[in-house]
Image (tube, rainbow, N blue to C red; front, side, top):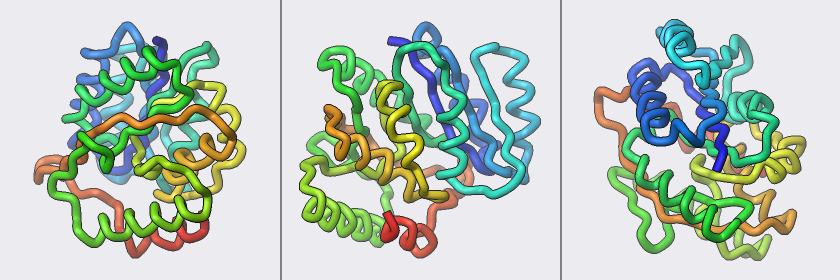
Length: 229
């Protein structure tokens, strides 16, 4: 399997180098491009990425200077994926403990030839460690409503931990409108609505340790975007 990996990164100086190193160590043969989108960071992310770029030609940094937002960053990264056939993996910059989950997702995609593999925190085998209670309640309410209205069976479409064929990405990319975290709902729901084979693989969500910095996700800020979707 050939991979383009897309990682949005805003003020992730504590995690960028470690994440890139782990991915290249474990998936060097599969990776065609490791696209890390520096989303208007104000820390040393720019310098770190430029240094990493010189050490490995597969590392493809994108530096966004205006209009920050996870959705905007993901779309910029998606537009830069390799044109060769294969898959696109999206994940967050702090998923440094999820290498085993990525391997399982790749294996499952290869075995089933599924169009999309969703990294699912809520299916059997998935785990939530240190997940905020209010965030969990909001997530489950969104899924109940979406599943009732749209009739899909998947239990976790909003995690930015997805493996999809490039032809799927090509179809959904013009449809992505979320500027913030709500884009993660779009990338999960649109392939289902378009009739692609979308399956789930259990993954772990592990809260950041202090040395990894703080997450920028805030339910109160992200909520309106999910309602819009």
